[in-house]
Image 1 (cartoon, rainbow, N blue to C red):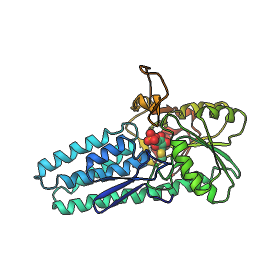
Image 2 (image 1 turned 30 degrees about the vertical axis):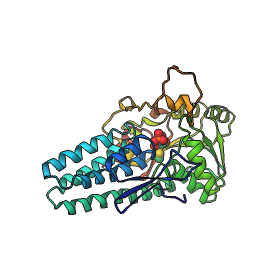
Image 3 (image 1 turned 90 degrees about the vertical axis):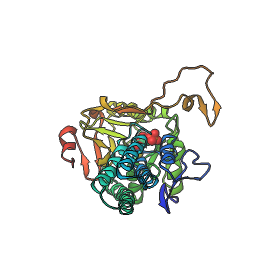
Image 4 (image 1 turned 120 degrees about the vertical axis):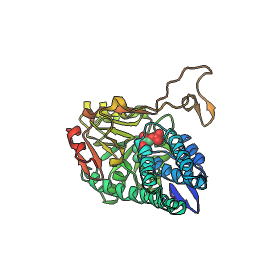
Length: 345
Ligand code: MRU
């Protein structure tokens, strides 16, 4: 992608404002952890790996803000800020994963001078950013092994450079297949209500000239039934220890169709998206977002005043509907509980 999703320079976190894409390419600047928290909650930045990397800078900015406090107050304030950052969006585990990683470093180095500690925290956030790109490239290479020549691939939501630091998870595999000359075609679900597919996935693929057809979410069933889809690739926001996977609302429906019509259904996610602390998907907290996301489009009301709305942002795909999970450590096949456990640590 031409623009960077996340960039930290001279104390400022610069994020491409994904609320305004594709029409307006604008940048949001965060100088405080509160501004970072807002950016995550309001979806200036979104996508599990991207919000993890963003939150890492949020922790750094909190430490910078409270750096002149005595050690005890400093730690209390930074940990309070971390809690606020972690609560900005509850489903994607990458958010708490990145915050915990920063906190671990902070605890281990609390005796160092404040300047030294700040420098270590900034380096760690930068490292998370660098690692994310490397991990995506690895997943893309593993994932490309299961993409047939000339395949038509269906994807949901946005799992690309915009959802990560760069390249993407499921969209990273799609990129890799395209650039390795496999002559693939992509169908992108529009992904109501936030339209990440129409606004963001289409933006990325059109920019790079990767053949893509945009469809309303409800078209997917017809395409799958008619044998027009060879492979479904999606990302993940949290994977339970048994392989149950939370991803953008609508993913579960696709997985049921994939099962019924024997279409391979793969999750592409870094191991930081696996939550080994939960045994299955029932324990995953599903974020519910505002009614306005459903009742309005670009500020224009499309449903009557007073209508009741149910707007979960994610759903859980049961492990038995998943063909495989593509990670940076390789492709994990069932039985997921046993096979995922091997990736721990
Ligand atoms: O609500 P969003 O846009 O943050 O949801 C994003 C998704 O569900 C993605 O599929 C997931 O984070 C994986 S992204 C690499």
